Length: 451
Image (tube, rainbow, N blue to C red; front, side, top):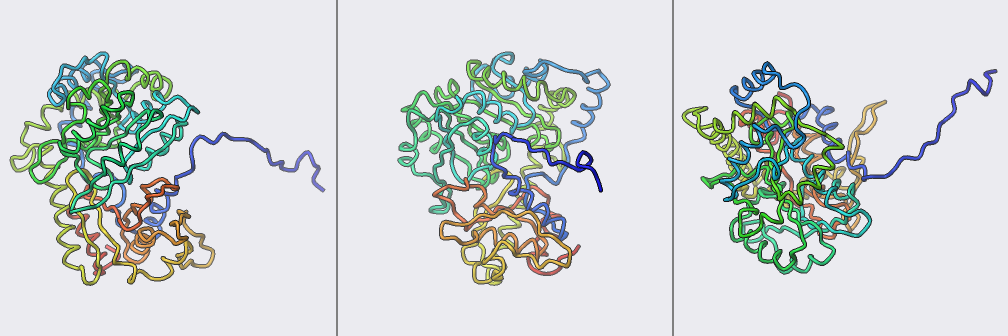
């Protein structure tokens, strides 16, 4: 008989609860994609590659010795170039040494600023438009702030907000207003009128700091210029953090380089956090991007278009393809594609699809027909206020299992306890390239599931 000393003993440990486990939001559809050999229109990872000149500059930077720790706020060559480029966009002179911080992508910047600005356990609020990028919720919870939402609603052929609802949502406890322009997941571009309304309302609450997530500012469609930066209007710069993504701009999201621009009083609070987390950022990538800034906007890249012009055309072509194709099969699949003005995504309205979605997806989270010995994928066990499975979640599971295409349910872009959660929209990526998108749509039409 085995002695007690040799028996395995279960060690009991107590772990802290920093943020809710929302891994399933992404994990479910990644697992569905693997199990059912899906083509993905889900995540915001572009299908293309960065320009060759960026890669060449990266190799040259490595050869030049940019391989060790560098200045925490960013290599001087890089921040000086950022100051030149964004000084024009923001209509002001930017101090590259005190008003710019290079970050490990935009998401890292969001984390550093939100944690650096929120006083934990004091009930300080962060106000956002819903639906929103789900990780906003995680950053706010990690900072021990209070998440608060104002609805973006589809009205009169555009995504809009009610200024009075926004005004009434602001108060003495509001610490941060978090703006995303262009907006994920809706593709809304806040125009000058929208931004002036926001400015006028926020001027009534001068203590509120604005974090403007501007990662798609260059990626506008239909011949629109780059988006108008909130910090460029009036005196907004003095209370605004503007966040940008080198991964989005150079189509190199895996390089994890972003940057933020803000008054030093605000930026310094985030720098303290970054010093304890990522410390300094990918050195050769900083050099490569600093030397590529001018080329992406000036050098002919494809058919006379610059790299940025070409990216805008490719994404717009995919957007237009999906709109045309969904409209062409509206009798068989009654979805309504909604215009996207900017960014990586397009929303479709699936309100009229309930009658064609098989019951097993609508009635239960146990929707898979499992083989012997097979376990279910990780699932988002969420319900609407009436106890039903969200319609968009049922739709996306149906698309994955039976069509072999991954899409994202927009109801998961609301807080799980949000009173304004809506389940009639689905987000699809327009960043995967036209060839990939054609293959995915062939599956949606039922031509073939396996390519």
